[in-house]
Image (tube, rainbow over all chains, first blue to last red; front, top):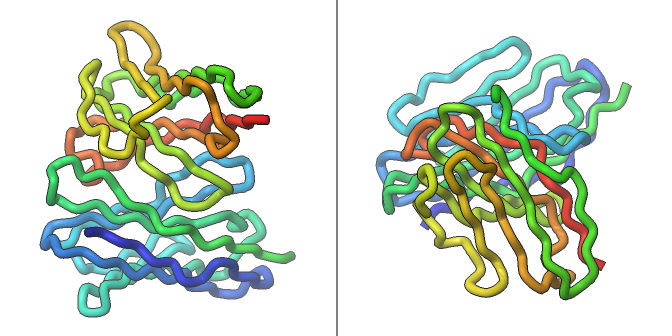
Length: 116
Length: 116
């Protein structure tokens, strides 16, 4: 069974600080996908990244970077030089090949508050 | 359209009343998914469709909940005889691929259902 753990319920930082959001997953499948989504206060869900289990290369997109480590079953997300607009709830999700429908399981989310 | 559209934005129902939510997927997307998010926490998968056919309904409550995706009409999620615990934000997502979790799901803005 698939499981996603986001141990940090809430993180509070001051603008320009770097912050890392942790995501640990459990799966028995060798083929799976990992995602990060952002949910700002307005409520919509914004896709940030998808990573498949065969690609451990880290990714950087502007101030965002992701560190995928299969050895520790983690897919952590770092925001460099945080800004107030980064304040949101961030969800990590996992979907497995087993069963065929690849329905993602979401973590409980980490609420990030960036103070000016 | 270029975005997943959900109506209404907010819906208030008295306990025992019926609630009906609508979702128009992105044009060209064959797969539609419904999720329930309670108290800004994790997303619970409800049901998915491939065009008008149910693809996966493993998350759908057996009683009171039903969903349809008919040709040339928005998809719908209906709750008969709502209960207080049905209060949540219901998100619809669409995808081009049957490997839903393997590809990006585009989420709608959600419908906030409040049951009084």
